[in-house]
Length: 158
Image (cartoon, rainbow, N blue to C red):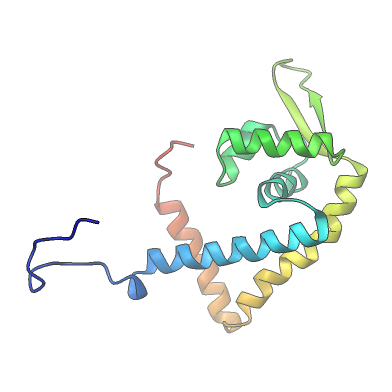
């Protein structure tokens, strides 16, 4: 590993412990890992498969491209997760009546049952984190987070 030749007195660094974007990344990673453990243990799914299911449950009939747009996953990950869910019988695909090249995704009966079984456990992760905040802090945090997300553009263009 190459070290800097800049004298310590003039060298600037980001102090990760107080750099909020880094702390937000750490929190997001912990939430993802916790959620991944839940969906693996109780649903035999990976996190990508859960995210696809959640996107479809939120708005049945979404296309894979729409799932890519609303989740932090690229096309390849969404494609692999969707294929696994189709093979497992948890999701079904219907060709668009307007454009045969596009297909819409829906949870199957077993997919809906699994989603409904996992959802309370996944929601508990959010409740656990919110418990550290007062109700007023929870409302303010949600509003601030929403504003920050809308302010920061997606460099991938999606």
